[in-house]
Length: 401
Length: 56
Image 1: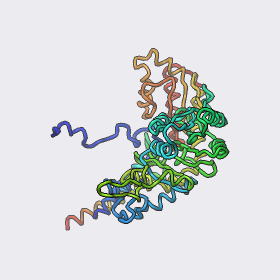
Image 2 (image 1 turned 60 degrees about the horizontal axis):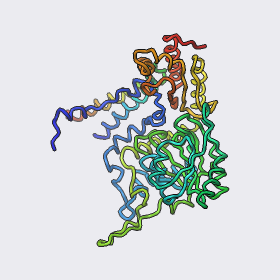
Image 3 (image 1 turned 60 degrees about the vertical axis):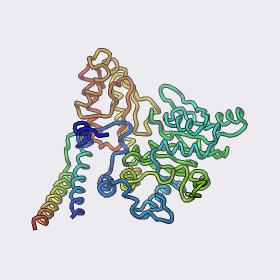
Image 4 (image 1 turned 45 degrees about the vertical axis):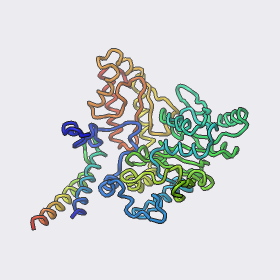
């Protein structure tokens, strides 16, 4: 089929409407994925399809065996940085979760998950054929996960099916409230029962220090495009030696006619995973990521500052655990919501007012509850965001102290 | 020649990154201003040499 020139025109000169150079972007899932200078340069070299595969070793043809560019070394460094024994780059964090579920469980097994887990955790369990038990949270306004309740849930599963769950899963920092969970508590429970512990670090690894060994994690999953200054799609699965044979089990299949075998390939990864721009940006940003996690306390202090300031606006309240331990912030705003009820643009007014002030990232249409992220913003930018909110509040007659 | 082109783009990427850090109004500090000017001078120098090379 031919596609007309006119129809193809829209694919030329693709430009982002809200470029990072022209706006302050506080989108909750985008801050940690902003590329570093090195990553942007690396795309020039390795943006082409299979460009990282120029020197793929013929006898062990696998992504993690390539030494130029230094992918093999990178995988080792990645594992060490996360305090784990081995690591592989996969397409997304959710895929890493799926791989862990699939390789650690059998159809019908249970996995225990926190009730603030991302929807994709549920889907990963479903696709892997697992059943789930949810660990409750405290509800409004903190939504704090009851970490000790993992004990009860394990007992519940044992009572129900007579065996342990295949794994227990905790979202280190959740996407709804940005609550940071003390993973060590769950790590200890997992160890007591001898059950593999999967820690989802999509919002933590790459922006804050992570030591899997210290937290008792058996598997760590990460998101490169969310928290490692990398292009999408990039995820990481890191694991301990004891689970290596299960997680990255080699292929055993053999062609019935040809007798072809692929014993060097890692089954759950379907061979090689992420190449080209996503992998190379993850690698090129790595030195900066290693450095930037040391500045985490400063990042948290900016988030706390902004929450403290915005709560001066009548009707604004931070949801989730206080004080903030992470830069992802969820605000409840009765006052802006009230404005939206009579505003001609309804809930879109807040988004549009912010956009007019060159701030983007709050979901269009939301006023009663909205999320944003301050990660990587300068103090000047944080104060600018504060002033913009104050300014909008004043415009609509909402007081702030 | 291509490495010089890429180096010039790299210099411009440096400028872009500074613009990202200082969006939306780009109130550059003294250090940042110097960095941008140096990067732009480097770009111009690289392009000048490239052009001379092409003309020869």
